[in-house]
Amino acid sequence: MIALPRLYAIADAQFGDPVQIAQCLLAGGARLIQVRYKNAGGGEFFGCVQRVLAMAPADARIIVNDRVDVALITGAAGVHLGQTDLAPTAVRSILGLDRIVGFSTHNLHQALEADQFFIDYIAVGPIFRTTSKQNPDPPVGLEGLAEISKAVHKPIVAIGGIKIEQAKEVLQAGARSVAVIRDLLESGDVAARTRQWISTLGI
Image (cartoon, rainbow, N blue to C red; front, side, top):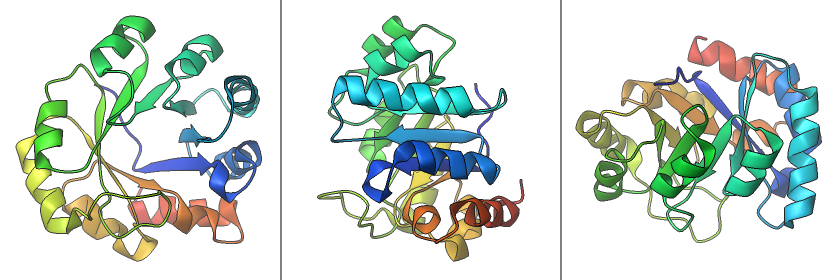
């Protein structure tokens, strides 16, 4: 089982150049970063991930959103899968045992199902209302997160609409790690905001 840092930062291309965003996140101390570039072609995404990996320090882990092929070829630390992506079992057979595989869930039923997969963490969300994703699922809320946390065995990454003021409540509800997009990337100084998050989460 991998040890997840408290902060799971996401370099989302909706908020600018994901390579520059990742650079700022790394400068602020983030050491687990997912590169998310929904509208990029395979070649463009491949180049983006390569550039992020080239700048990342040895203790940083870079996760690729959705694209198992990009994760495999670039040598990224792993991949994050959604409900409509390739099945975790197939992904594990492609990436092997040493890469990180995470899986998104949006309710208790999906989380219980994910708990049976050979994955490293279960992402649960959105915890709160979010605008970082088109057509998001209904918010799980802190009570829903707590219910899921008690029901599953794998580490939980909470995601969706989480602001720094809510971070400790999210951890108290059972999340091992907090995934953050907007509250980091719209801050004006991403590196400084990353440091604030790390301090708040008690890393």
